[in-house]
Length: 454
Image (cartoon, rainbow, N blue to C red; front, side, top):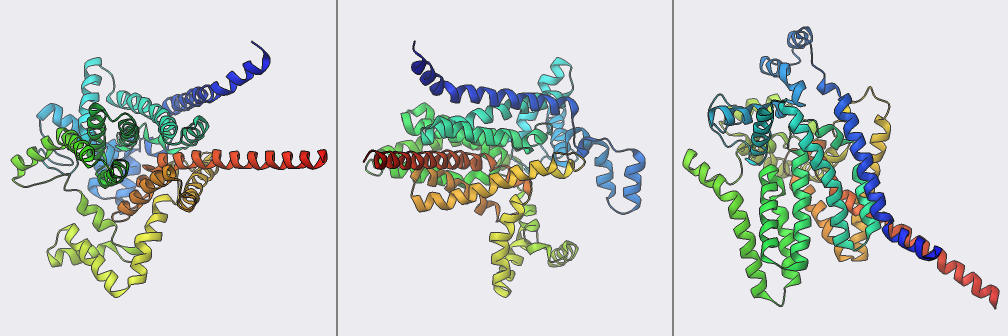
């Protein structure tokens, strides 16, 4: 083998070697965070500290009771999820934040994962959160690999896949959330897996892949319901691809419906039997509508609660009334809130960084976050200008997700969920930019050489 052949083969395999290095370095960082366990939310507060906050009126009696446990699981919601899972195991009652009563406050995707993980932990005789943390770490590493493969399937370019996976590997927030009992890590994994399975189904057009895509996507919906309407993008792509084969489109749609029914039907049937009403996803959305109906925090939520109680409305009814009233009386303010304002709230900072203000890497983490977010938005604009259909499809996921999120409460935690899609766009953008610059330099060099020869 001559030297040129060796270097050619090395160049061809380099993306895989670099991907392996990215995974190894990411694994090393996960192990560091697993062992050192940094973050102020993971520090157990003393009884005196809790009592002081209670005396100062900073927290309520309910929050004070929760603070004795939340440090172990990462947050209040995480603790309530673990309580729910243990309640299912011990009492057979499905209910979130309830005193032994059934409810449909949250979808069953994540509670069922916790039930399985807790049963494994109980069987092995180890701490439940150790199993949860290891599980989340595996899913986070698998997400890096999925991002690479999604880009490879979409843009047919390994270097773009390497760049995209590198962006996600250096992003800080997964290294926080993998140590919590929250939906973020599994939700992102199933979302990325659904995108990858969709690409395979589109490529191979086999029944099993179409059903698998629907099952995985709908399980992702059972983890994070807000992504449900994103399936519209899949339908648009499907009908564009088979616009001259209507029968094929109908068959594939039917397969997706079968996959969806496998996941969602048992939940809907359970809700109808228990509550005698149709509940497709959860009863939780009212709180999110309510929390997102205060533009730029201009008004006092205590006034909102008081008025809601006086009117005898539930949270969703009241929120929709305030939104309608707001658009009628101050259209510009409310339009700004539901577009620019809420989008800013989603991405104003990397989620969970506020638990690490004592650490020296905070500014670096923020810099990476702003680079990923700003580059992604620039890439969205350029994608539509250049009419690159693959980039437009990925950009549409980001746009639709932001639009859906902006209907409800927008916080950096929900912005984190779509970061993998931003990394995919950035991988495409960076490699395209480098390629275009290289081609420009080569053309300039060739032009100069031709001039010299003449």
